[in-house]
Each structure stands twice: as C-alpha cells, then as structure tokens.
Image 1 (tube, helix red, strand yellow):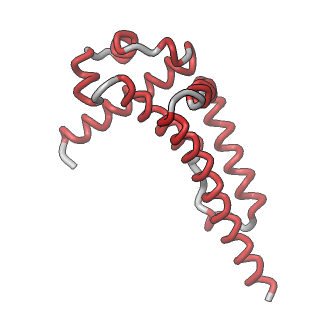
Image 2 (image 1 turned 30 degrees about the horizontal axis):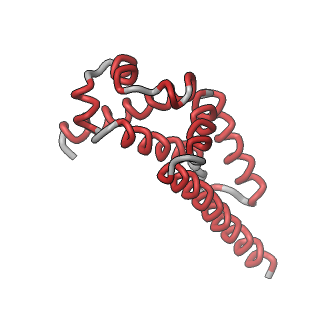
Length: 150
C-alpha cells in the first residue's frame, strides 16, 4: 500500500468516526454534508472524493459501527467459554464506555432500519454475524472440552 492509499484510508476512517459522533450525539437527522465536513475539518469536495454521497457515508458508518461491536477475542487465548465471554463482554462494555456515542448511534441506525432497506440489511448482517461468531466460538470450546474429557 502506498502513501496515498494509506492517507485515503485514514481520511475515510476519520469521516466515519466523525459521522458516528454526530449520529450518536445528535441523531441521524442531524447528519448533513455541511455539518460533517465542518466537524471533520474537510470540504464537501473532500467528503465526496471519498464517498459518492451522504447515504454512502451513512451505510459505511453503520458497517464501521457493527465492526466495533463485533470485535471478538481469539478463542485460542482462553481455557473455557465462560472466560471468553467475560473478556468479550468486558471489551464491548469498554468500547461503550470510552465511546458512548457508539451505542446511541446504533440505536439511531436500528430505528432507521424500520424505514430503509439498506440499514435493515446491515442490522441483519450484524445479528447474523454475531450469532455465527458465537456459535463458532462455542463449537470450538465444546470440542476442546469434549476432547479433554476423553
């Protein structure tokens, strides 16, 4: 990856973080290109260089938020499922504590899912991904426990 690609990714991340702050603190209706540009310290042109339109920013932001909430620990680092869940829960709690706007933004996006198909699909991916992740982790721990019993 070259310097330009790194800078572009960093700017996209900055835009998404700023979007989540606005949505989390003021609600989805408060998000405008003007407000986002001003708060992020960029021009509308720079915003639209990285995203096709404001809806694209919103959809990318909900995906970013989902990634934040679905950050799970590597099960190989734990002896049992209970300790894995405890650390995963603590990590989620710490994320919410350090970035309180994140949970408020999730509520805004979830509410928007009632009216917007793309938000609904993102929330469904969130639910499905979470179930899949924990099912896989549980399977790993059950398999290890079963193998240790024999």
